[in-house]
Length: 596
View 1 (cartoon, rainbow, N blue to C red):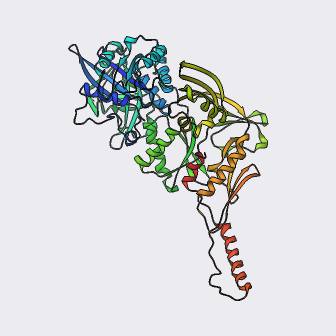
View 2: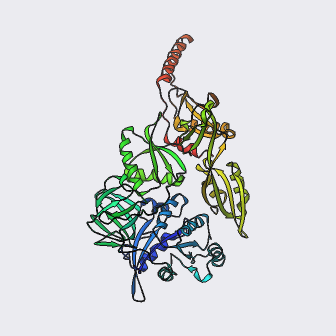
View 3: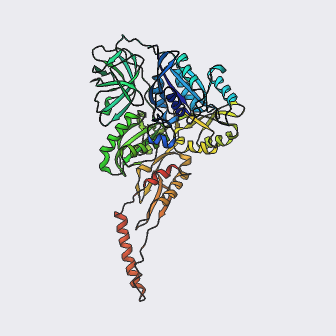
């Protein structure tokens, strides 16, 4: 066990951790040159197309130093704030972390939040200055930032480049010499923590775990403590580039188990596995339950596909434990699910994965956050995940909405523009710290609902991509919120209703109506698009009818003949308006988010 090292790679998005992981795999000979491809650990098409890591990936490498062979278990983690739950799980399975900082960009928000996660778990941090081959690299400045952040010395920082392979040997040496070996007793009862799972259509569910104590032999009976279910360990082994079967797995190892589990509900990430004949008494302290930040409805386009969608969501949840969903129904869209996501990118990725991996075409409603409504009658509390659940305004005493604390790190040139953006979003500046002469850290308190839509995109555009953003929830505060309904021909479309701040309601209602007028196709009858607060209509647009010239065949003669035809057409139109219904295209739901 003294020759095992478990470590993960943490960094801000796009600081080159997947490329550096490729070099580590090549140097240790884990991947042959023939199988080598860029971002070898990113196995989803989506990850390659976007150049981001969405899932953490575990892989085992063998490395020989001074005649002794070491087993290195590496977990490559995502860098985007929306996938920070993946990072927290990877960190729980490791003893050390490589903190990678881009030499041309310096320390960014997500670097800091991932670092704090690692420090909470007492990991050994190895700082690495990546992308040293770039002409824009600023090694001295960025080194000073790292030293200030983690209090290491200049000698501890390893200069490296994922592209040229500079510093890869030093990194491997540092992992062996600085990361502690796992602590655990081989003779103790078997105890392992599940940190990920995937679904395989031939073999059922494959659970990945980190062994803390004891050992497990192939064919033994195991028990998942959380669900109290028992299975036989049909196959166990380590994670190479594929799965590498073994006869026995012992303390300190990272491995997988296949035991013919078919139901997604039976494997929980963070659960403890033990053996039936020699069970452990203590449950491993896993990770805290994930807190969804953004809620949206996902509905099948064809209502008959509801069960298939449920199946797809359950399998996706196995692979992405931060997805939370409950069934719900909508008057306009039929049956579907209310899903909780960690952010807008997470939502977009889930929607794409449903379409690609499971061939599901889905409609996603306008995202929102959850609110708390207190009623006048005996101060009863209602949790609202959907604006359509809001009771009659006369019964409500007050509504609270979730607030977050946002930290933005940016160049000092963009401070003014960013402050304006935050104030526009009802934010309050709480702190401003100059990290260096031209890097500022701004702290804001801002309602979660305001940053759900397009805050991140706007922040990137006004700061020319320099600002980095991180946030955490700080609880609920009372706000003046009202429900804005959108009506089509007098019928409310519940998928478009939203809870908005009183001051923004008129403006927003007007803009949504104008946008929908462009997007809803013309019918044979007039369509009235209205925004309403309670019974009061605050904005209206009309989609004009497509009209056929029924008098074309009527040549000359008395005007009353034409009038008769037009009256007949008018009656038909009136009847059509009563029975005709208006289809809202998916583009309209998405466009409401990007109103600016």
